Length: 379
Image 1: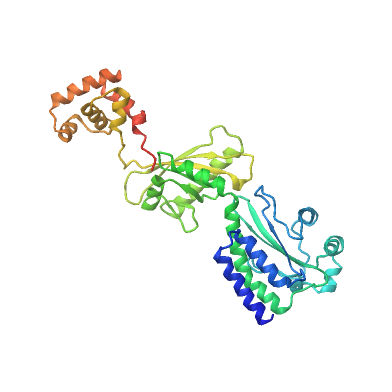
Image 2: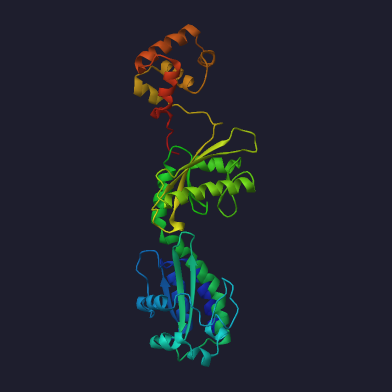
């Protein structure tokens, strides 16, 4: 490839990270790459595809009819598969590397399909997320061009990592809106909550759940973004529980939720976990999610005295007594903390019983703990 084109290829890679033109990264990268190799002759055709996004594909020369017919007719058939070893996932494939021109011209794929579209060299690059959403781009050469020169192939291969990165960013944007809804919903939950996919990868977590995960005391996130328990065996057990949740959901089991206790290396009381399936059970496995609620028994219950005052028309002193009683303090402890006598505390309790229509401490505690006074404000 001439020096000029080598410099242009470097420029293409650089523009991929500038993002100055406002276009999505993949479209910009494909436009620049096609322009670099076409040189006015349209020898390279590029097509961006977002097969599972529900959005209209952006086509250049290769239209939806071609792609759909190719998939319907040949699926994953590769004309070079029987004559060469499988390539690595990140290796660019070119027909010229695998089959002689004369051999390719005799294949069913060429005679019955590619020739009709004047395509002689076709390669497809795709990324597939765990939930099944796919994005990709294809590169083709017409019969008159047939193959890249060695320098052209080298230049294209040098650009492929940048195109793949652009593709990855494009793929991340496909369900950005739906992910944003999940994130906002979970973030507003007042209990530690997170959502994981079928591979136990954390999709989102609110701040309360994040603090538990960051403490790494019985539950954390590994380098792959998946939930991990205190050791490999406990992690396998946890993942098996989550898989059971998804399996029950797919089978239509009414109560598909599961609970478990997570032992903690610190010796603190076990973390409590409740997992419940969400999403469409008729979807593909990767599209199923589980909503997980966590409870840390070591964290004291927060009771809003202001809310108690509004609910039951309590005085500030009465609300303070009711709040501390609900959090497990004895009458003696309440007296110490509030600097009041036992007689004053008993007087407050009698008034609280009257205003809340209760008659015993246990009944009052149950009422307070099941009220909205224990719901913390979103953080």
